Length: 276
Image (cartoon, rainbow, N blue to C red; front, side, top):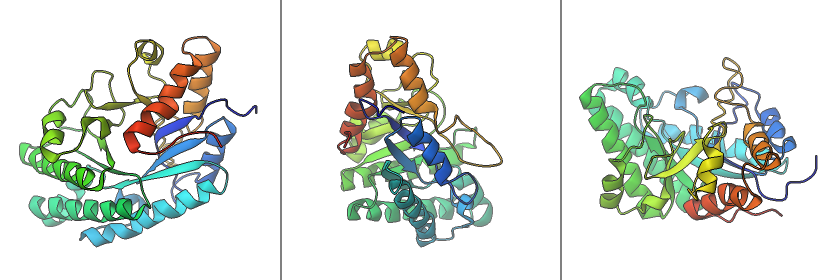
């Protein structure tokens, strides 16, 4: 394949050698023209970990970093994003109660922030359940989310949020109180109406019009790399392929593509995305 003229970045992808295709999925991304990925930690249970303390997340994070090193060996630039999946609160609360569960998740985020401060990761992952929960669970989840925002402010790093569909407008005052610029708070699997930085699924039909309108956003596959759910959410080739299609059909310009894949994520995460 002809080398891409611009970087092609997947802003939210999982590569899981234990439960999925692992490095072969990353090779598919590269062969399709992909150059950079933000590799996001999967839930602890994907690593066979049942955390009872923040320290128990270390194996989850170390595994993500080992996978990142393996992917770099095939020529893809990898930016690890470490954190605690918001759905963990439901599993943890069933074992230890809600208050303790939230505390374990916050401690896991503290550990993730230490990796960011060491330079091993570039951002934190947090959020709140995307499914309906009891009011007290939502309140505890928002406390965990706020803690992540505070850590992002302290570390000077971005925070990726996994949350319900929609704009998540209430996160704006939370971010302000926490001291993190809203330009560093990413809504994963976003809708374009969010005031946060939207990371749009690559098949989102509005991408060409949004790019032409000057909206700053990134693209993602949210590929889960699970053999039990092959291709979910969309496959590892998706971000490069959709980008190439948009360009070939004249739906976006090369400048639009550069903004999506280099300009916006570089500013958001404080990294420099470029071709070698």
